[in-house]
Image 1: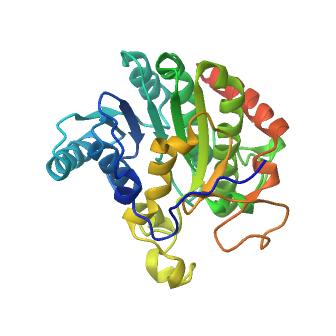
Image 2 (image 1 turned 45 degrees about the horizontal axis):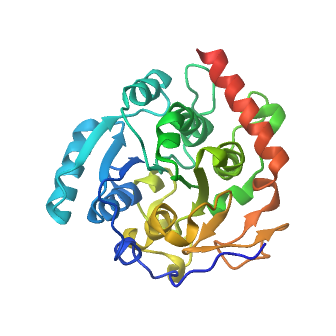
Length: 311
């Protein structure tokens, strides 16, 4: 199976990727869209004429973002919905209140390398936010996505997935000493595996899902990592927010990806599967364990079990 290549790359922006795309009459949901990559992704989708819902925890910030997007794109069909990914009641309320088809779901919101923290269910905070909350949202919106017949789910992952597979016997750090980067890596692996299994299960419903690495971008996501002054990433690999949102917009809109899912992209192109860190260029490559179909099925089962016990 050959890798998918496009005419876009590292320096491409979300607006450039969306040029010429007409999504009038289409509906999109973008989580975490009040700032950063989510905001720019929502802006680019709104510029194509799509009806865009900003699914955010802070609705006041969301309303400001919606107003700003409408002002910059001229699209008045930008709305706000409340979704707190660590509050399953919030996720369920959003999903059950949705009416009609949904064409694009962008699972963008997330946390990174945060201090040790757990939900009321004793789920590790990063796994709960980055994966379980989005899993609950996507499964809750399944019928709306299926109603479209050619819906897409875009899953924002990270090269950080290379720091940890799913540790099946201790997903929630009940026994291991907590490590913020291992927890982040595990949650980002879960994001990729979700895209693999969602496509396997839902392609017959016309739903495909792909995952991506947006690149190194300084946003609120880095609040726990030292930000630009941390020196974690070489300056030449750092993107603007507009460039960082490009791959998300590509996966949401490119005709080239019609009917294609279960893949992982970086810099607007599919990236190679690797067996060791360093086998791909910096910030590229997807670990084999993150696209393994058996792992994907196992994670889906685990996620359903966890959500069922929380009900």
